[in-house]
Image 1 (spheres, rainbow, N blue to C red):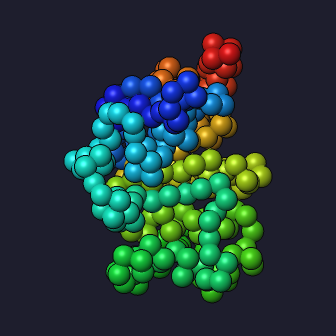
Image 2: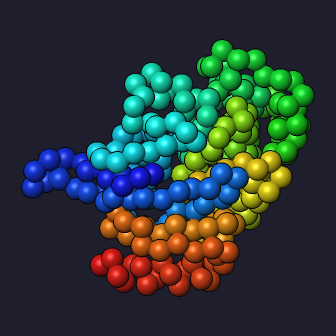
Length: 238
């Protein structure tokens, strides 16, 4: 992201969600994005993922400048080169686990490689649940389906928006461990927005936002260090 700004509204009612944000998110790394409420976390993720267009500045995914793409090309890019994991799972209730996982491939007109699909489903621990529907799964299992769906197209980057926000502590740790393993074992790039210092501690680096700007970064985070930084950020941002 290079000098990315995002303003909602016009005139006196305009709100600047991002203010000239310049940052490079490393490939093969796990980056957590944190900040006080209203700091611009969700807008940051939406602009980085091509879900929203910045008001100014440029966003590149690999060597592709997203600002020059049509809506159709942006949709194709998100489908083929980006994976998404959301707090609310966003599974289709009428589809089985396997059908939900392979949905991005079907939308792209591609067939799943049977061997790769089986390995992916084993990786998320759902090999005994492939024929189940979301309503027959626990919250943690549903999020594992969502993670597998995000990974099935072998994307350049997975964007995760509060992926553990709807889960209990134990289940959240299982999902975070799964995300960590995809980085360590598969070289997957993950960008995760979270409000939870424990979740952020699973990342390689934490990017702190405040008032739409990058306020700080932290490498090798621990939950205690992240919590302390968030407390100070919150006081500074009031």
